Amino acid sequence: MAENVFLVGFLFICFNFSAAQMVPAMFVFGDSVVDVGNNNYLQLSFARATLPHYGIDFPTKKPTGRFTNGMNPADFLAEKVGLPTSPPYLSLLNESNRNNVSFLTGVSFASGGARVLDGTDPFVLQSIHLTQQVDYFSTVHEEVQKQLGFSGAEKLFLKSIFVVVIGGNDILGYFRSSDLRNKIVPQQYVASMVLTLKAKLKHLYNHGARKFVIVGIGALGCCPSRRRETKNEECNEEINYWIIKHNEGLVSMLQELKSDLKDIYYSYFDTYTVLLSLIQKPAAYGFVEVKAACCGLGSLNAEIFCLPIAAYCSNRSDHIFFDRVHPTEASYRILVDYIFYGPLQYTFPMNMRQLVAV
Image 1 (cartoon, rainbow, N blue to C red):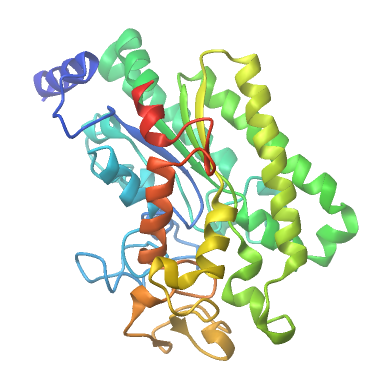
Image 2 (image 1 turned 90 degrees about the vertical axis):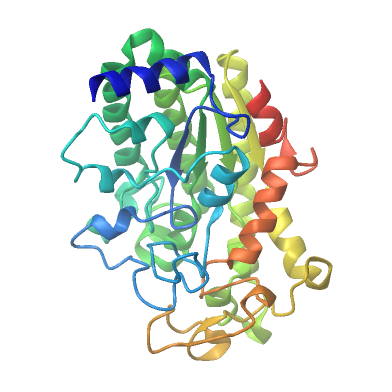
C-alpha cells in the first residue's frame, strides 16, 4: 500500500495524469448548492437530502444527499476538469485506512445549511459551517503532507482548485430572524460576512491554496419559498437588494486580496445576474416554469421541501427550481457552463478554464 501511495503521489507531483484531467485536485467549501453528502453523516441533522424524490435523475436514481433532482455544481465542475466528484469529507472519516488516496484528488467539506457566520445559526448541529469546514481542511493538509512530503503537498495545492459557494443561508437566515434584525443592521451584517470570508480565504492561502473559484450568491429573493410570501408571487426585492450589496462587497474584497497576495488567483462568478437572466428569459434557456418548484406542496409547491408526501413534476428540465429553494440539475448545468467558459461579463477577472491554465 505504501508503494501505491508513493506512486500516486509521484504522478501527481509531476502532473503526469491523463489528458482529460486538468488539475490534480478540487477542494469544495460551501452549502447545499454543492453538498454531495456530508450532512448524511451528521447524526443530529435534519438538513439531509436523503428522501425521495431527491436524486430521481441522478445516475443511481437514488437520493445521495444532493439537494436537487440529479447532479449539482460540484459534480459538473469536477467533470469539467476531468476529476471524479470530490467525496464528502465525513465519509472518509469512516475509512479504516486514513492514508486514503482520495485526498489526492480533492475532498468536499460542503454542508447543507452552512453559513459564513456560524454563530448566527439557531440550529448549530444541523450543518458544518465555514469555520469548521476550513478547520477540516487543515487536517487534510496535514494528511497530504504525510503522504507526499512538504514539497509534494505544496505542489499539489498550488495547482488545485478551491471552490467556495456559500452565503445564501446567512442572507435568508437574517431575514427570517427578528432577533438578528434587531441586533444588527443589514449593512453591518453583509459587511461582517465578507470580512469573515476574507479571513477564511487567507487561512486557506496560508495552507497552500492559490486558485479560487468564488461563486456569488444568486437571486434567492426569486426562489419559490420567497415568492409565495409576496404579493402577486413576485421576487422579494429586499432580499435581492442585500444580496447585490453583499456580492459587491465580495468583489471588492477579492480585488483587495489580490492586491495584498500577488500569487493568489481567482475567478468570481456573478450567479445573481445569470440566474436572474434564466428567470426573466426562460425560453432562451429552454425553461417554462420560473416561479413554482418542481417538487413540494401548497402555493408554488413551496410550502414544504421535497418530502416523500410531496408531488413532483415529470418535466423537471422545464423548471428552474426543483424544491422551494434549490435549482434543478438543468439550471445547475447552465450555471456551471458560465462558470467554466465565461464570458468576462459574468466570470471575472477570468473564467475557470483560464484559472486552471494559470
